[in-house]
Length: 287
Image: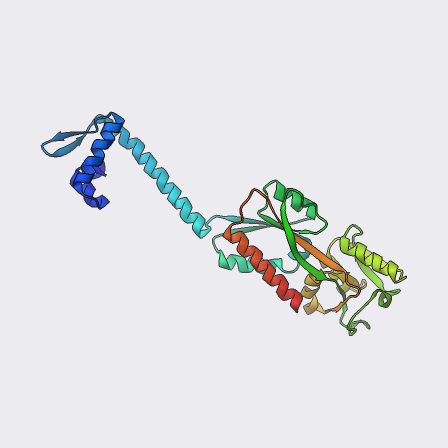
């Protein structure tokens, strides 16, 4: 500040300290550095060549500090930050669009990257640091991750609103004897549970189509392919298109887990996103 303003008095005023304090700081600096920084001529401080050379380095330090402060401000406002989320197809086809929209209203300076894939791919992406969080099926191997149950949803039977079974209060395996069905992939835990229930009831199911995704199940049902036992989160999205969802019993449960990388902290933005997901899931399952 002495270099910029030309005198200890002006530097003291700019720094809101006393002039003797400025003078004492300069003396201490010269003593510790072993450099003479100013010549004292008739009460004036005249910078030495060493002071001018040092000033260039000092200016670079302050530029760096300014950049650090700007970065702090950007992080505080989430400017240019990216939230990387992995999600199962069932969540991407149900609650995720509304959650992402609501999140970006709360954090308008952030961007959201949504990866929709299998649990295996999502797990690898979290482990490699490519995702901040992921919602995976409960069949996923979560070793090496910080994981916890996220939701449990009891399956429903979906059908066109005009179907003879549409006004039932509950549907069981026996009600679906000889009824064309759209199933999930055999590797899906919910589909395996459903097959076991058919076997216990001595009912032979008539699966006419198979797909890995609940959303595709609902689309096929809507097209008249058959009925489906599916995830209620997804079924809820098709109610406005004319599908009716009837509770299925005995219960077939769809489960999801929430996973993080163990070496990554959870930012306020991540916590807010998870909170929005929980609220949206709860609201959807309650309707």
